[in-house]
Image (cartoon, rainbow, N blue to C red; front, side, top):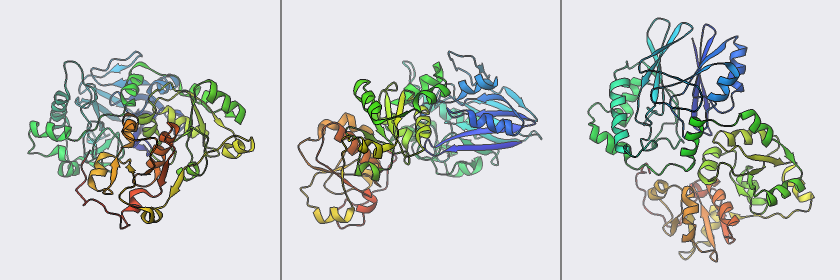
Amino acid sequence: MNIEQIYTGCLAQGAYYIESEGEVAIIDPLRETQPYIDKAKAENAQIKYVFETHFHADFVSGHIDLAKKTGATIVYGPNAQTSYDIYSAKDEEVFKLGKVTIKALHTPGHTLESTTYLLIDEQGKNHAIFTGDTLFLGDVGRPDLAIKQDLTKEDLAGMLFDSLRNKIMPLADDVIVYPAHGAGSACGKNLSKETVDTLGNQKKTNYALRADMSKEEFVAEVLDGILPPPQYFSKNAMLNKEGYAAFDSVLEKGNVPLDPEEFEALANHEGALVLDVRTQEEFVKEHIPNSIFIGLKGQFAPWVGALITDLQQPILLVVPEGKSEEAVTRLSRVGYDNTLGYLKGGMDQWKKSGKEVESITSIDANEFEKRYSPELSILDVRKPGEFDSTHLETAMSLPLDFLSENMNKIDKDKEYYVHCAGGYRSVIAASILKARGFNNLIDIAGGYGALKNTDIPKTNFACPSSK
């Protein structure tokens, strides 16, 4: 038996490769499926099953493509209804994979079809659970994504309580927990940076698994402090349920080099968004007018999903050399399949063609300290919980997550200093504001991580909330 966790940091997502006696199961695969196919081929094995723990909201799974390419059966738990062929497992139904067994445990709560897969080894011993978004390390899945007319988030939270108590907590303490997500995912509030643990340790450390917890307490604690889900969540869940374009065709269409004239023509006539995925330092120094920055080195795909509201939006890329395929791939992971190409030769070629270039003023924390006065307008674009913990006394909270909805709160004629925690999100915010006509912006490089070491007045530190 071979179990491999394939963890993707940008999405904080774990897919799983399980092999026994030449038969393979993939759990919650990424959009690009060739790595799984290549791995099975290298091991002279055949992919037999693709197990989906639920209809993912935060990424587009590769289950449909993988099944088409390998003939594998797509397995969902009870209540899953799709527009393509699947096998809908019954609660506690077992699937043979070589010498091991995989048992479907229906664990509704995060969603109605949510299912945990229990791996039973060659000796018949319960070895591991693949919990999807039902149980994370340090947290559980948010129960507000599958609300229906006759079903509230409180109802779903109650179902989740029962699923955890009846299906997962009775298992032995030495059972290994393999979740679908870790820290950085918006699918929970307080996920651990670790990506694997024992169930026994989770029973000791995960607030949601306290033995003395009532259902009412569980519902209250799980729902406390949940921010609205990113706008792309419902759209990704629908793609996973209804189907999507083949990844190979998306990559073929999007990974196309364009000279500056072709690039500019598409931007002007196709309504394409110019998305610059280089580093924030490079973008600040020079960029194409009206382009938006979301760097590949940060939480790229989740920020794209949160800030670009139309999945069909035509996108043109400015990428570091050799990173075009990666950028198109990572966009497709969250359902953005309409990339039209990338700027060949990057900004150097753009400038050689005599095209216009713009920049953003950026200063470090020490320089800002010299300039500081209480009259300055400061925009803190961190999350509300970060801001509430501690912030510059005169700063205004304008979270990047909700920037578009709150742009009317600031004045295009005023000068603003913009910061986040480390410098990545503030440049995203500045790029969006600049494209919308806010031209008096100064980025504070290093963000609050650098500002906290200055003598600029700050609020007293408060214990961070989960908000």
